[in-house]
Image (cartoon, rainbow, N blue to C red; front, top):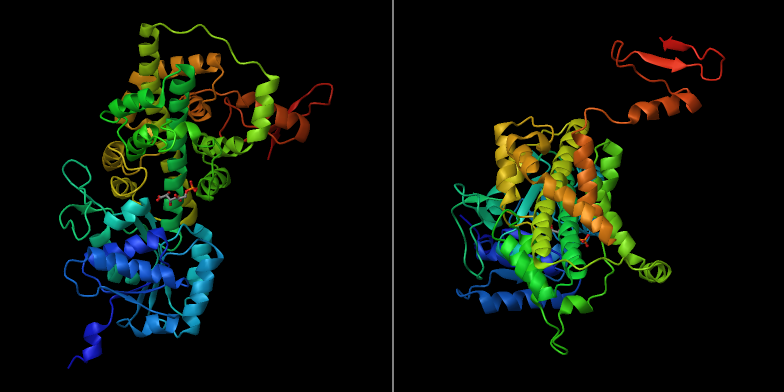
Length: 511
Ligand code: 6PG
């Protein structure tokens, strides 16, 4: 017979009630799970419970506050399922150590939902394997996503996934399988049962965090491309923030539709309540970053996968942080003076900019997906790229109509090496590249920085070049370092070296 307290035990334990944690807890509660919560800050526990009381129409307590890790474990059904929403790095290990101290058991599952470095996740799975099962599931979607349906990137023990799957699929964002469009859920208590959930198993430990890291790298590039477009319109064409918002709003109805474009419109329309000035004009132009974009760029260098647009987006944030240096630079170098454009020229410029953003965006995604492909090969992960593109169609920060086309590309060819080679994207690039080139040329003449948009063009041009000048580079390397080279007219793989300093400069074949 079931004991009375078994009826009242909670389904899930939750640790860390910051912005993401609190909203994930409310989302779990909406989906019928009883959640025991703990945070080192009592006020956060109180705030979460208060919010639930306000929103919960059934008035039966769905969230139970706990004052210690021990109490949290005692309030849970066994084997315990505990979700962590704490900052990446040491805090994850501190909580794990506290759970061990509180008596967590080897078949209990702990899910790390933070943006942990993927190699830390791999190490943690091993480190804690005798104490509990460490599972990871990066979450994307910010505050609103966490509350009403995020994109979830679970990875780790396949056994743990069988337990987590129904919960994750319930709380995740959902997509209409026919159209690939998000099925919106915006009210507390509301749940969406139909649709494809944006929560698919990614692979073994580390794979999910790697995929989320690349999601963020693409997010950095996507944001930077939009910001460069804003800068060209605001400074290059001297449009007001509202006028830029109007253009973005129009673009958001077409090929450039995305959540990031949508929120950019809202940011640009926002007025400072005190001065009625567009708030964007009052926001200091120094960008912060928490590390995931940098990790993506570093990983691309380690794996040997070109991802210059993602790296450039990280550099753009770094450059922005040198405000006083930039001010000094602005004193030293004159502004570029250009003739102002007539209305037809302005219209052409805006059209070129539209196409440039579209092409640069295709390249940023091509870089991110190729990076995941090469990393998967290196680490022995079987990543399903159509499935990854699918779970990014809703809930996450880079959600966009565009992800449906990426899904289709990988469904057409699961072994696709690079999105640029997909028939749909190749046709799109072919059709829009001329405007992209014109835009890059004009922006360069205007003296406005467009590192992401132009690095994407350089990437595209290099990736479609049958011949690159690296033959000379190989000659240089061989000259000063005897690094050898291969020849186009001899067997592939056979190495040669020139005795550059000898009189005859004879070429020798290396065994
Ligand atoms: C998401 C976001 C999120 C992001 C933070 C910090 O998918 O919800 O990517 O996880 O990491 O917003 O990003 P910054 O590095 O820009 O601070």
